[in-house]
Amino acid sequence: MTAVNTQKLDVYGVGNALVDILALVEEDFITKYSLQKSGMTLMDAPTQGGILAGLKNISLKKRSGGSAANSMIAIAQSGGTGIFVGKVASDTNGAIYRQDMLDLKIEFNVAAAPTADEPTGTCVVLTTPDAERTMCTNLGTSVNLSVSDIDPEEIKRCKYSYVEGYLWTGESTKQACIKAMEDSQRAGVKVCFTFSDQFLVDMFADDFRGVLSNYCDVVFCNADEARSFTGIDSLEKSAAKIGELVETAFITNGKDGCLVVHNKQIITVPGFPATAIDTVGAGDAFAGGTLYGLTHGYEPTKAALWGNYLASNVVQIQGPRLEGTWSDKVEQIIK
Image (cartoon, rainbow, N blue to C red; front, side):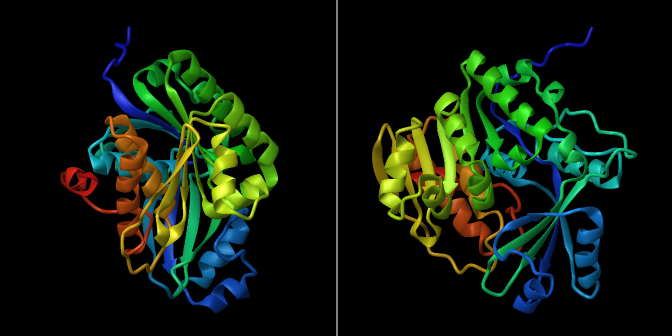
């Protein structure tokens, strides 16, 4: 009989498990391939392969990633703990991904899918000189995440669950999201949801309203997503509208920091000075830092301050995540 692990953890994260392939490109590269600037485009393997062929003379970096995964990494780098649930294949990228998570002390227990089904998903992240990131994603086997991968016993070990909106693009992954949120509610675990990208808000606004109303304690989004979701140009009024649906909302606003809506009260939390070279991962780092704060007893505005700090640092490097541990800076920044 297998022993049940009862060690208490901070966050149960659910998302697409993707290997990020990072490249710095000029603006005309985005135009040449007719890509949606600053957004994420889902594409099949041949289309993504064509883009990779166009990058053959450019230096590339590989990292384990995916939106929720990057947030889980930020939690771990802050000194927190957690479980990440995502689907990889039994291939080289899948093995690299799993080991990367374990090295960061993040539990990763989902069984790998057979390589014959689909390869591990990849995301080509193109960063232009204006620091904006454009993502070209082939989800691979990550689309095969299902309700059977969600373990209610693992959820019970955590204080919060965190689900990414990108999973809403597939029926199997969407049902996995819903099960994670329902199991969290039953276990008294707070539910967090991130909109992930404006194109998802445009596609699934009604669904997301249902998620916020029926499941969510905490929501993460950026200013553009908030405006699109509410149909209101004023960020303050958009924040108030979202605050009617959830207990707490965190709305990032670039260099100006973020708005925190808690119990219908709106507070601006300032950002930190930064010279941005790459905005990929800023929102994920913010969410991870904020979740660390929430799970360690900090009030929402203090938690958001730590989130802002991590985001301000990640935009100053290429790629979606920081290196090393940042736990020694938490008290200094928050206090």
